[in-house]
Length: 215
Image 1 (cartoon, helix red, strand yellow):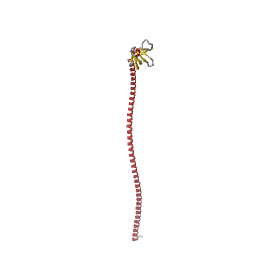
Image 2 (cartoon, helix red, strand yellow):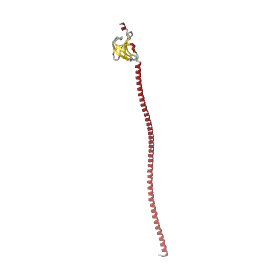
Image 3 (cartoon, one colour):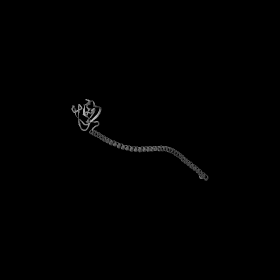
Image 4 (cartoon, one colour):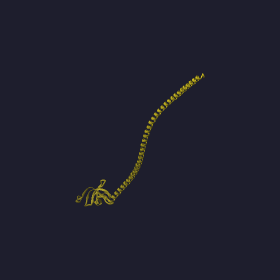
């Protein structure tokens, strides 16, 4: 009975069945006690509630709550190599899947980046074309303004010329009127002079005839 009280209690300590074994879980500390679980697979995690160094058994609690005694020699405080390998293999597979997903995502991002670069290049060309078009429009606008100013100047010059033409026409009409008057006066003077000369010569001829006794 003294051996029973020499058991050391270990609370909430996780232990594992080592190697690839199937260890029975018993209701007591010897092989004579009833088997509660026929074979616990190696690597199974459980809690060690207490340990009896003299009997070489430890009381454990399984994940489903079942408690019993198992030989301490089959317990280790770290996962077994097989489980570690499985865990590492699983983790490696997860990392490989994540790596593949990242590569796919990287390829998509690279394609998007390439598309964005091409789009930016196209936009730059479009901006350059628009800048040239705007410059051309500005030049055309400047030309239009120059043409408008030239048209205004030509219009003002045309109006001035029209006024000058009107004045010239009026002057010409006035000169024609004066010319007609001068020709009339000249003609009247000529006729009058002809009459006077005719009258003068007629008188002279008359006086000569009178003097000679022709009449």
